Length: 153
Length: 153
Length: 153
Length: 153
Image (cartoon, rainbow over all chains, first blue to last red; front, side, top):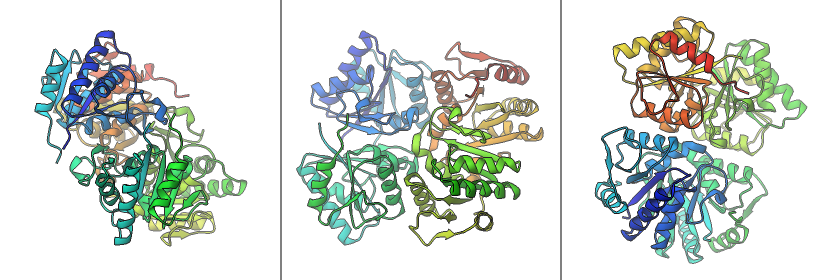
């Protein structure tokens, strides 16, 4: 069964964060993982672009009502219409999560991951628990994500 | 862009409904559509099985908390944890919907589709509006679904 | 413990429906029930107005992001931000439900009530199941709602 | 219009946290505020008990499917059935929020409050932003909550 990796982070990413996210996306696709994210811009878009450049599958869990909210690298937009409440769906749907930078929306997702005991790897993100495994490079983060990914059954 | 077809119907399908759903799934995959459904058993499972037999992509929007709730033919389980409130996500995420038989859960989805003006095709299902296009065969239903599918932008 | 009665119906009510809803609200309040509804206009607003005229308590489960979406007779707006997915919360939170007229949104709520086995009384509404008890007057509907209300424990 | 104060915190409170929460509930009720919370045990139950001891109104936004999940001091259980996704509804429905201690669920709510710019006052809680106003006593926290409460229109 394919491993599903969630990528979370701000919709207004710095150049550095975008570069990191894109490489994370590429690494996920190279390992035949499916990328799940919030489907919008910034870290989400860069990660999806990276995944698509390697032929990966990308799912965007959209907060709003329109598929056109999805960034152009989302293969399947899941249109929730439930606003930020969709954050927990991104988290629950992931076998492991990689957080890149991020603001308060990302913090809510990290909190849910910690509450639900879903493995989470952080690159320059919120440091609110020692259960967030730190990584410094995209490759290290994705390696960790795949090795820690919980079995889905 | 790939067309996303929602398939809705009861989790306790008759043999006839299962056969219909499986052929609907096959037809969606043959046209390179992505199948979205509630991810559980009955009509949902048969449709996914059909789609996989033709190499299609299947997404299951799961009401509960566990990926293992998904039927074995779901490629990507979206684990919502929001119970039956996930019904509207199945509806919103579809460019067109095919309803096969169905009980009250299906009726709630039909109602949402009608409210949101999402094209819906019915095979032996609830007759609550003339906006539900009737089909008698899986092929006819899938043809209608692709021809009526709303553009996603 | 107070009995919680849900009132559902269209946001664009006819004069007749508004009058009925207002009297339903009054009757609920006279029996010391709490009124729960979707919090918007039409049947919802008329029911709240009736309840307040008799000193009742009114809760509005708002789909959007702003408390100002609530009609002026809502005491406590619950601001869900989850759009029409809030329909099932109105249903689940009710010990019994009264449906007055209604379009597809109301139909989705009726479907959820039938699925969840929550007692439902209808006045000129969708006839999709014999489990919808018919009433012809507001008083009859509210009497039925209180007598059928499920215990909450 | 009544002011709605959200009280958030862990379902497994220490004696100290329970005492604080109860007094916070009392202070809210003395100022004729409505208390909204997650409706379960711990900080939520103590706050509701305090509010009821002063004749206040208490609303519990329940994650599960049963009204019986609500603590005995909840007047109106809103039964969401959407699990932890209900956290954001607690936040959105509050004109101001008081956080007492708390674990990862509380952190998710704090994150949402910060994202949505809803005033938040903390007593021995997560320190993830200077926008969380610190209070040391229940009275100080409730005074701050009422003075910072956003207008609802």
